Length: 496
Image (cartoon, rainbow, N blue to C red; front, side, top):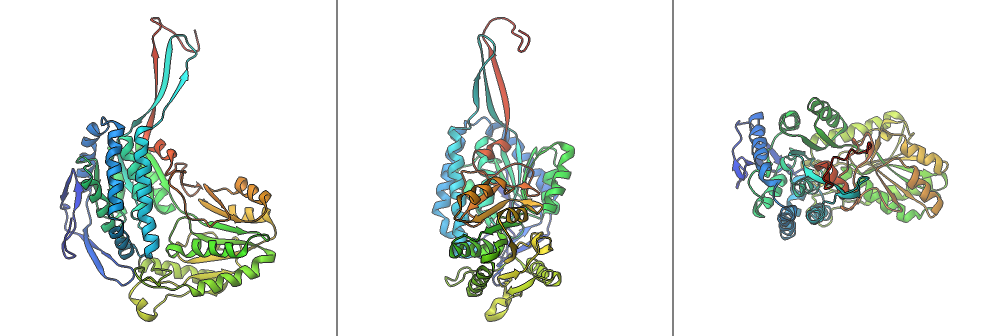
C-alpha cells in the first residue's frame, strides 16, 4: 500500500501488494474540500488477468478448507473492523463525504454482515428428504463456484464490499475486488484487514481502476464465473450483455426511485422525520433514498410546509464537523447532474419549494455541496418523479386514496424500497401486499435495512438475486443433489 499521498498505491494480488503494469493513475479527493487523499493506478487487462489467475489458483485449496475454519477468519476480520471502526469512520467521511454518524453506520454494517456470514460457516444448510425408493438416502448440499468479480459503488464503500465478499468467502469462493474509483482508499483499507486476519494469499485480491477497463475485463474474463455488481441500471444492462456469452452468474443491484406514502391518518411529525432522514441522509446518495413522497389530499399542504421548514434547517458542511447535518455529494460531476434535474423539474412545471442550487457560502465552494431540494405539485409522469437523481431532491405528489397512492408508487421502472405512514392496519397490510418492491416499511422511512433479511428489489432494480441474509448464499453457491443407494440392486426412480 502507499504510505504517502505522493506515492501511487498498489494492487493486492496473490497475497502481495504489487505495482500495476502501466503508469496511468488517478487521484482520490475529499469531496468536502477538494483535498487530494491519495493516488491509485489505472490498472490494465494484464493486472486483472494476474489477479484472476491468483484467485483461480487459490480456489483449489480454499474450497477444501472446512467452512467453519473459513468462518474463523471472518470472525477475526469482524473484530478488526470493530477495533478500527473510528479510523474507518473518519476515512469514510473524508473520502466519501458522509457525516460522521452515517459513516460509522457504514462501518457497523460491515461488522454486522461479517459476523453474520461467519455464523453461516457452521450452517450453510442443505436439505435431506425421504426417498421414494427403499434403502436409499438423498440430500442436497451447497458447493462453491469459483472466482467472484466483486464490483462495488462509492456510496457504501465499506458496507457493500462486505455484503459481497463475506458470503463469497464463507461459501468457499475466491474474489477479485474492484472498488469504486471515488473510494479506492477505503477499498485498500478493507483488504488490509483481511490480510491482517490471516486470509490465505490469492483468496481476496484488489485491482484498482475504472469500470470501463477493470470492471469490463472482469465481466468478460472466462475464468470469473460469478459477477456481483452494485451500480446504475445502464451499467447493469451492459454487464449482463457482456457476461451472457459465457453464461456467467450475474448478480445486479441497480437503481431505485423510492416512495413514501403518507396517508391522511398518519402521524405527520413521525412521517416528516422519516422523510427528512430518507430523502437527505447521505445527501440522497442511496439506492434506497426517498425521492418521492405521495401524500393524501388532506395532509398534503401541512406536510409540504413542515418538510420545507425542516429542510431549510439542515446545515451543510464537512462531515467531520459535529454541526453538519448534510455532507457533500461525491464529486463535481454528481453536482452537475443533480442541478440539471432541478432545471428539468422547473421546466416540467413542478413548483420548486426550497433548495435547487449549489451551495457556495462559507467555503462550501471548495467542495461539492447541493442544497436539500423539494419540489411540490409534481405529476407522477414527470422525469423528476421517474428517473433516479441520486441526490438530495424529493418530489411531492398528491393522491386521493390509498389505491391511487399505491398505483403511483408502483408506476416506475424500479422496485427497491417503499414505505407507508398510516394508523390504519388495513391500509398498512394492503400496502405490504401490493407495493411492488423488494422492501416495504410501515411507519418508517425507506432506508435502514438489516443484514439478516434479504436486500434487493424488483423490476429494473436488479435481476432477481438478493444481498444479505441466507438468500445471499444462493448466489455464491451451486446446489448439488446427492443420492446414496444402499439396496445392493439397481433401482430406477419413477420406473420402479
